[in-house]
Image 1 (cartoon, rainbow, N blue to C red):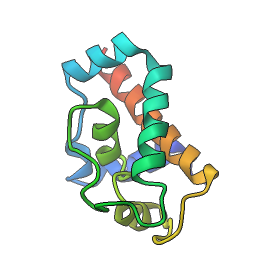
Image 2: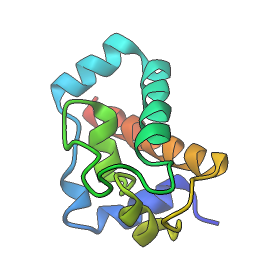
Image 3: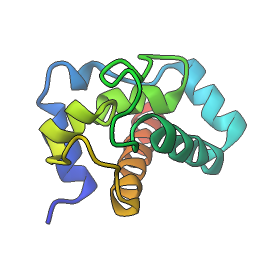
Amino acid sequence: MKDYDDYLNDLSKSQFRSRFHLKKKDFDYINDKGMETIKKHAYDFIRTRLAPANPENDGKQTPMKNHPVFVAQHATATCCRGCLNRWYKIEKNRELTQEEIDFVVNLIIHWIEKERKNAS
Protein backbone atom coordinates (compact mmCIF):
# COMPACT_ATOMS: atom_id res chain seq x y z
CA MET A 1 0.00 0.00 0.00
CA LYS A 2 1.21 3.50 -0.83
CA ASP A 3 2.19 5.89 1.92
CA TYR A 4 1.91 9.68 1.82
CA ASP A 5 5.44 10.09 0.48
CA ASP A 6 4.63 7.74 -2.41
CA TYR A 7 1.67 9.92 -3.36
CA LEU A 8 3.74 13.10 -3.05
CA ASN A 9 6.45 11.54 -5.21
CA ASP A 10 3.86 10.78 -7.91
CA LEU A 11 2.49 14.32 -7.66
CA SER A 12 5.99 15.82 -7.93
CA LYS A 13 6.17 14.46 -11.48
CA SER A 14 3.25 16.67 -12.50
CA GLN A 15 4.44 20.03 -13.82
CA PHE A 16 1.21 21.65 -12.58
CA ARG A 17 1.19 20.10 -9.08
CA SER A 18 4.90 20.62 -8.45
CA ARG A 19 4.70 24.38 -8.98
CA PHE A 20 2.76 24.92 -5.74
CA HIS A 21 4.77 25.95 -2.69
CA LEU A 22 4.04 27.80 0.49
CA LYS A 23 5.18 31.41 0.75
CA LYS A 24 6.50 33.34 3.72
CA LYS A 25 3.02 34.63 4.60
CA ASP A 26 1.77 31.01 4.66
CA PHE A 27 4.56 29.97 7.02
CA ASP A 28 3.88 33.02 9.20
CA TYR A 29 0.20 32.08 9.34
CA ILE A 30 1.03 28.47 10.26
CA ASN A 31 3.48 29.60 12.94
CA ASP A 32 0.92 32.05 14.34
CA LYS A 33 -2.02 29.60 14.39
CA GLY A 34 -0.20 26.31 15.03
CA MET A 35 -0.51 23.02 13.15
CA GLU A 36 -3.48 21.79 15.19
CA THR A 37 -5.50 24.81 14.05
CA ILE A 38 -4.33 24.33 10.46
CA LYS A 39 -5.48 20.71 10.65
CA LYS A 40 -8.88 21.83 12.00
CA HIS A 41 -9.15 24.28 9.10
CA ALA A 42 -8.30 21.45 6.68
CA TYR A 43 -11.06 19.27 8.13
CA ASP A 44 -13.54 22.15 7.89
CA PHE A 45 -12.60 22.91 4.27
CA ILE A 46 -12.71 19.26 3.21
CA ARG A 47 -16.02 18.55 4.95
CA THR A 48 -17.75 21.60 3.46
CA ARG A 49 -16.09 21.98 0.05
CA LEU A 50 -15.06 18.46 -0.99
CA ALA A 51 -16.90 15.78 1.00
CA PRO A 52 -20.46 16.32 -0.28
CA ALA A 53 -21.58 14.04 -3.10
CA ASN A 54 -21.90 17.00 -5.46
CA PRO A 55 -19.97 19.98 -4.04
CA GLU A 56 -21.07 23.44 -5.07
CA ASN A 57 -18.92 24.82 -7.90
CA ASP A 58 -16.97 21.56 -8.12
CA GLY A 59 -13.73 22.18 -9.94
CA LYS A 60 -13.67 25.81 -8.84
CA GLN A 61 -14.37 25.55 -5.10
CA THR A 62 -10.77 25.77 -3.90
CA PRO A 63 -8.97 29.11 -4.16
CA MET A 64 -5.36 28.99 -5.39
CA LYS A 65 -4.03 31.08 -2.47
CA ASN A 66 -4.83 32.93 0.78
CA HIS A 67 -4.61 29.88 3.06
CA PRO A 68 -1.88 27.23 3.33
CA VAL A 69 -4.51 24.46 3.10
CA PHE A 70 -5.76 25.80 -0.24
CA VAL A 71 -2.23 25.78 -1.67
CA ALA A 72 -1.70 22.27 -0.30
CA GLN A 73 -4.95 21.07 -1.84
CA HIS A 74 -3.76 22.07 -5.30
CA ALA A 75 -0.31 20.58 -4.69
CA THR A 76 -1.83 17.29 -3.54
CA ALA A 77 -4.66 17.11 -6.11
CA THR A 78 -7.28 17.24 -3.35
CA CYS A 79 -8.87 20.44 -4.63
CA CYS A 80 -11.96 19.01 -6.33
CA ARG A 81 -13.77 15.74 -6.93
CA GLY A 82 -12.35 15.46 -10.45
CA CYS A 83 -8.79 15.51 -9.10
CA LEU A 84 -9.70 13.08 -6.31
CA ASN A 85 -11.03 10.71 -8.94
CA ARG A 86 -8.13 11.13 -11.35
CA TRP A 87 -5.32 10.81 -8.77
CA TYR A 88 -6.84 8.59 -6.04
CA LYS A 89 -9.72 6.77 -7.78
CA ILE A 90 -12.26 8.22 -5.32
CA GLU A 91 -15.56 8.18 -7.17
CA LYS A 92 -17.60 11.29 -7.84
CA ASN A 93 -21.30 11.73 -7.00
CA ARG A 94 -21.15 10.20 -3.55
CA GLU A 95 -20.27 11.61 -0.16
CA LEU A 96 -16.72 11.00 1.04
CA THR A 97 -16.35 8.51 3.87
CA GLN A 98 -14.69 9.52 7.12
CA GLU A 99 -11.72 7.36 6.12
CA GLU A 100 -11.39 9.29 2.84
CA ILE A 101 -11.71 12.63 4.62
CA ASP A 102 -8.96 11.57 7.05
CA PHE A 103 -6.76 10.46 4.14
CA VAL A 104 -7.18 13.79 2.34
CA VAL A 105 -6.54 15.88 5.46
CA ASN A 106 -3.52 13.81 6.50
CA LEU A 107 -2.04 14.04 2.99
CA ILE A 108 -2.49 17.83 3.05
CA ILE A 109 -0.86 18.08 6.49
CA HIS A 110 1.98 15.80 5.38
CA TRP A 111 2.62 18.06 2.37
CA ILE A 112 2.58 21.19 4.58
CA GLU A 113 5.02 19.58 7.02
CA LYS A 114 7.38 18.69 4.15
CA GLU A 115 7.17 22.27 2.88
CA ARG A 116 8.05 23.55 6.36
CA LYS A 117 10.98 21.15 6.61
CA ASN A 118 12.29 22.10 3.16
CA ALA A 119 12.00 25.82 3.94
CA SER A 120 14.08 25.64 7.12
